[in-house]
Image (cartoon, rainbow, N blue to C red):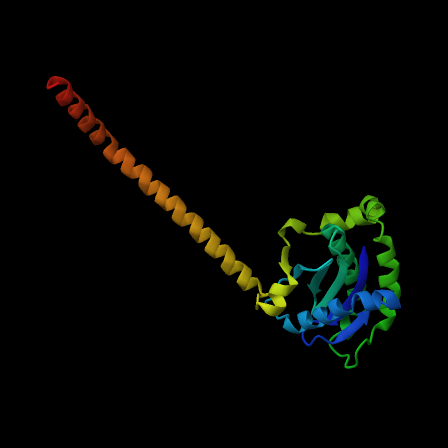
Amino acid sequence: MVRTTIVVRASDALPLAASVDDEQTEQALQEHKQQAKVLFRRLTSNSEPRLSIESGPYTHHYLIADNVVYLTIADKSYPRKLAFSYLDELSKEFSTSYGPKVETVRKPYAFVGFDTFMSKTARLYQDTRAASSGSNLDRLNDDLQDVTRIMTKNMEELLWRGDSLDRMSHLSSSLRSESEKYRKAARNINFNAMMRQYAPLAAIIFIFVILIWWRFT
């Protein structure tokens, strides 16, 4: 289920809105909210626009749109497609209600009233079976990009091992992978070409050796 949601300005990580959590949820997610703050500060203009980051029993899902980051912390078992549908719905409503004001606000949580919409929407997404069958979600899914293309990373790798959030890092990894595939393919082509070139000669030599052996034995 969706546990909490945070909305910040991407350019400087200024908090714009957040869900109001009860004391139990606040205590359970304290460490994960701190991780989210670090994550916000590491985002750049080259960062992945949609990303899932696993952290213990939870997964941080974020979406970046129009210089605003929408992040929700959900149970790891919560369907990723629902998480991004939820964030997509938040982004559309927030853009409509507050979009022109995002660049001008200076104080944190300037749009605290957005919690009402977040809470109402989160309740619709708490029951995964009901959410999956809802016509509203079906409509959203028609517009949502294929979640299988959204990367998943590990929080420990991001925070302690220096893994990158940038799309260029993903592109570099993809290029390295494609390059390795190309080298393997090239080796196979060269081997097959060599076999075609020398196989007839090897066959002739083999037959010649057999004939010599047969004649003198």
